[in-house]
Image 1 (cartoon, one colour):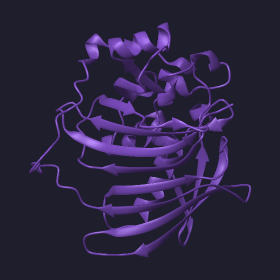
Image 2 (cartoon, one colour):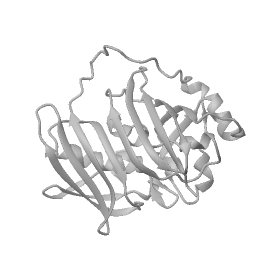
Image 3 (cartoon, rainbow, N blue to C red):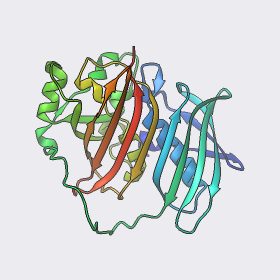
Image 4 (spheres, helix red, strand yellow):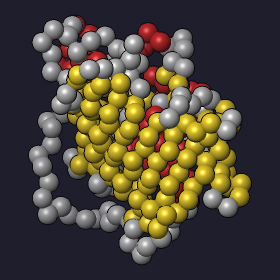
Length: 268
């Protein structure tokens, strides 16, 4: 079992209730990564649904999560033949950490798109370079050891060489670390983490700092092939201490497999 699989494993404790031991290895500074929390909550949502895939998920992050025991409440709001909807809430020490609404369905792995926008032109992973601007917090966080990031040459140069006149966009590849057992046993389970595993897109404008997510909505558009996911992250507006971030993910076959959009605060 990979570390990711064990870190997102949940145990049913009663009707609509689950227990989880949150892995401190997914901390960034003093708070657990939001994508990791979404991956955990997704497991509970799917456990309460007859459908296998989380096709549309919307989460609000209420307080920082930490490593250790936590409880999940999962309430089915709708049980349909095509789509079921589940509300999930994660609590630690009686305090709500994150809550979300997840629509579940069954995606056809052989579906052929009627229309698909052109990919973002992310260079092959062999042309990308490993880097994470959060590495200076390695003494506080193991997250950079959980996820492998490879940045396109122009993004790498932007993150390491200066920010003057930059456009808030990041491109590259993301995957679970080979040090933790490699790719997820279920590639679709990793997507919830992948859409929020990148450094904040405002890292293209200024040196990295913590940027807490307020709300994040993401869609699973196709079942990904095993292997790294190509990404493009971008922002449309950075203003008044707030910024938006949109992330698109493509699998090894070049299929668009996920889209996300979040609203976040610029950290102090």
